[in-house]
Image (tube, rainbow, N blue to C red; front, side, top):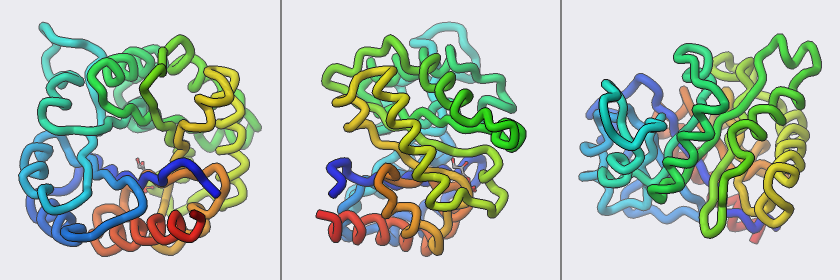
Length: 256
Ligand code: 13P
């Protein structure tokens, strides 16, 4: 039995628009899920989305957050502003932000601290690239990302999520097998014990992301240390995303 409530997050990246918002939200109206479900649209759509959410359990996440509180930081959006707009969680350190926008573990640490300060749930994304996996450096990379992004944070009365997103699996159609994902999630949980402590590590949800589809979601979700999914491409098809959420909800019900 898993004590952690499963979480399914859609990361729309730089995709979507009002049409997708309407069809996605419509498919969730009036439905109950034994899982926490969130969509992270581009910033500009957060407010539009919020107005549609009165009749659904969906939550809104952001794809990023500023490490700054306020001031002369053109183009940034602060945790406080996101909170005010109704956002519940924010992705931090997605590999696309690390590789294309130079985001470092130190920046992730600062962003997570800001998110926690403003009662947003941070979802720290970590993962190795193909070369690192082939050189058997996966554990070393993950441990470094976890330690440098999390060590020293005070989680008293607060929580966070970790999303394991192997870069070689993102947008490639080559998802990690459930066995590889489970093995890696177990390693991440052990590393979290070292960063925090056993009790804290047990309550942190670890999500898997990378070529999740409605066909592989179930096999991933039944793994002991996989507490949810971070879904890219498949979340742009409302029917597929709904099916993934339904799988998570049913599995959670069966396990309890
Ligand atoms: P895909 O599901 O398209 O592989 O993307 C994963 C991802 O990056 C989610 O954050």
